Amino acid sequence: MTSPMPTPSAPRVRRTIVIGDIHGCIKELRSLLEAVVATEDDEIIAVGDLVRKGPDSASVLRWAMETPNVRCVMGNHEQRLLTRWLAGDKPAKGSSDWEMLSQLGDSYNEAMDFIRSWPLYLEGEGFLVVHAGLDPRISELRQQSPRDLITIRVPDGMHVPWYEDYKKEQLIVFGHWAKRDPMMRPNAIGLDTGCVYGGALTALILPERRIISVPATQEYQKHAAWN
Image (cartoon, rainbow, N blue to C red; front, side, top):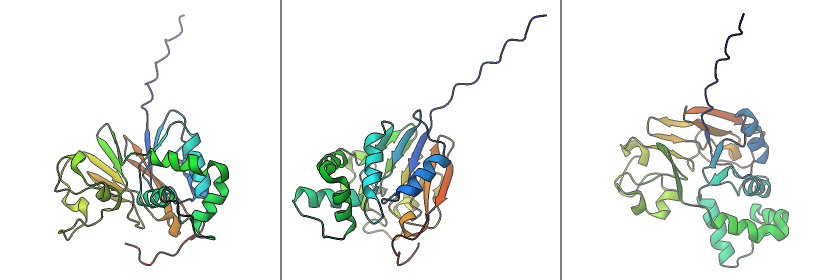
């Protein structure tokens, strides 16, 4: 009697794991990577604002620098950090920037050069990752203002958040706007769930659009008003 032929397993679809604003919360980042069972076969994209405000920006930067399958987009906090570094301004002693400088030591300039290489957005199959969003009135991505890409919420001259007037099918994945829960729309998903404010750190797994969050271990910084 012949043995049945084994059924070939379906090839594993490569996942893209998009992670919301980390802000130096390295404990929660490690917990989230465990929760999503991240492997070297996954593409991991950080949506910007990896640094500042939180407890250990240096470790978060080292993780991004040392993990080959991680890519990052520029956030407003990285831009502020770079602007001050390029101007030669020293961080105020006792600030989170000063602590990061102290922790990174001789590798601080290397870390700043690493951040300097980050793009304003990353495109994948059917999706775009950007820190804050875009102006829905401008059809061409290359014509979007860099400032809007990293800071926009309610566009000038409008009275609603940018994503409420965004009509294209391409999925925009963004951070920047801290909310208690992920912002879910068919064509826009917001991942900043305020980990540094005691909320949660959230990831989106593509292509299945599955959301996974881990709670913050503590409130690292006060947040005046949750949206």
